[in-house]
Image (tube, rainbow, N blue to C red; front, side, top):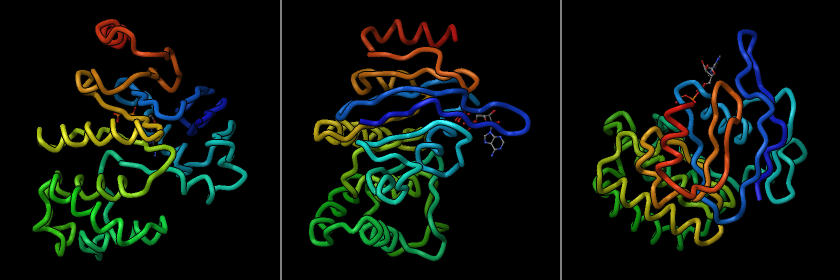
Length: 229
Ligand SMILES: Nc1ncnc2c1ncn2[C@@H]1O[C@H](COP(=O)(O)OP(=O)(O)OP(=O)(O)O)[C@@H](O)[C@H]1O
């Protein structure tokens, strides 16, 4: 379970996350929705420990982020809105980096990487560097890296931007499979229609505040609520 408790973050100019509080359960897929600037990416950065919270706590299966950050972080993985790949590493070396940093089984990973690489159609790019890849290809590399470890929580920020239809459908399928094995998934998208049949819960942010949350019972109702927010 993920517990986000009274999380608060501000800059000199504005409050960006205002006492955010929610729970995620094992195996759930939760859509984090909100208009531009609502605070979605900042909330992801807060969960990832990439920003320093002024108040609040984030607890993943009993491990508090502020108590033991290394133990906390090894249970989560992140697909950022824009791929952050290292210019000096090839595609294949990026996969190796994840295998090493998450201490994954290299033999098992070899098969897994082949499966993902084939499905995302980047098999001919393994020895290339990020600068020679298209935006969509870079995103695919980042997605594969994030999918390799079996984590308790997978954060997915605007995953469908820049992906072709085939890759989008494949990713949706993988996210559902991950959730079936107990991974919690928290994802943002502006393409609300993509959430239908994927997300089972939602969190709605508006100007840094959590204004609504719960199970997605009626998708049309959620879209109306979002349009009115
Ligand atoms: N590094 C930063 N310094 C100052 N303010 C920031 C910074 N990053 C984000 N903000 C501000 O925080 C607020 C929330 O931004 P955030 O990127 O979290 O929104 P978002 O919901 O992810 O938006 P989008 O849908 O456009 O990606 C915005 O008002 C933004 O201007």
